[in-house]
Image 1 (spheres, helix red, strand yellow):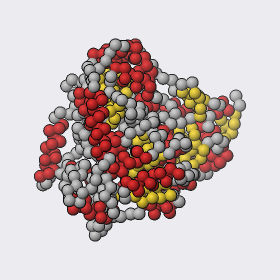
Image 2 (cartoon, rainbow, N blue to C red):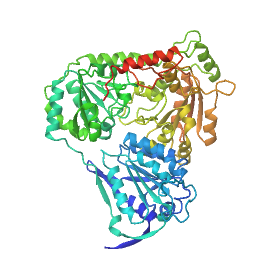
Image 3 (tube, helix red, strand yellow):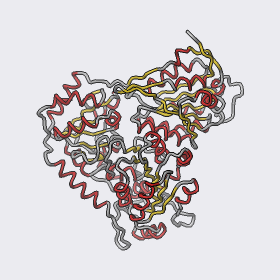
Image 4 (cartoon, rainbow, N blue to C red):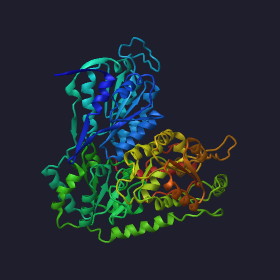
Length: 636
């Protein structure tokens, strides 16, 4: 067997270029490129290796380690987990910045390869620059913080260890049931050390995403449950999207008159205009979906984790009568809510289940179309919310007074409602446009009222609800879909937290459109605070003398080199969107919107930790209301 002498860093890059994935008869490279912020601990090892061995890999210079890792995650999510970017960082603060992004990818089951630099294997210069020290172990480094947020984690302290470590990492990333971030920490001195590697290690390696079929017991049990039900509902999760189960979902739904409801990750698996699609489910769901779920005697969960937002903190269903059937490639997820489990691929399972359901029809009858019509009317109302200085009834009703709302209208020079603005965006952008959002009130708004007309155009991260994903994710989605317009829907709070990769998008001529909703505060959390009896406390953005903070975000983005727009009315917004379509470079639309004009909950409840002891009667009432609601909630 031939040998080739390479540094550990060179071997790493040479290997990842040769990793291919095989899906439904198609074969293509799994690793598209590498995001990197070079620094102490990776520039001389992995940096040198990339310079020498780059080949077909795209190398993108990130601006913040968390930001570029979130971009890598959004890329993989948009590519339905079939392609990834690797992420290279320095030691210490650089690798610590990966923790949030890794947790976000883990919560969403999205594969990406993280390669943080590490301290010296020899320990000769310890403590090296940017090294933390612990009394209980000299082996602990910053990278140990990545262990609980990685699906696979390893530390390479000798060149030959790289081989088994990489094979394990790619096995995990290409397994639909375990997909998540793989972290390989390489000691910085080892990155540059040479070893005589077997040439065979660098030959083309194909990872097969074979669709796991259900066994006969699972199919028969699933068919019996469905045929015995009167009003089943299909809950479409992210696993259905990654399995590309659109056609069979629509066929089964239409043939058997079964409504579809969606999680955040599952939305846009099936287009919103499909006649049986009732939209988002749960706390951020539509009234139509939540009403259907309440009536259901069987919940068919397709690739869902059943998060508290999807289940309204386990109050969305009638647990006295409803049964659960879960189809999921993850055995862990299939067991949720004590369901009948089918541990298999969603698309394959539904295709094999179809002939067993011949002759069955649910008893929903015309109810599905009636629920859709009712919600369509409500969505239309939300598109025309107008501000009244004398008696404006905000969507979120609490102690946020008319006087304060008027103060915001004056300070921001706007009377524009958030729902009105959002629906104007939905109506104006091209149907195949991809939207990105993640945190604050916007994910609730878009799950309820954004209508995707093309499949896989809804790239919303809500498994971790990570502030900062919005702008970073736009870059990742654009890299995945270069021929589609990408819109980051972001609040001012998230934009202030992180927008570093907007600069990267401009630098690499990857056009993204930032649609920034500025209500000068963390409006979603202010709602949560006040709805549960508290006063508004440090969730509005105010100056030292209690004036509303006003920021010209258009001027900020203009300084970066983006085409920018300032918007205070629907007419200005539509004009800006039309002009932005014509631009070749990135854009930012600074929309001033009023607080308290986002969507409200529809027949849903969120279990949050209300203070048990308080001198405020409003908080005492909120605590008692929570106690009563918990009595009806399922506990497992």
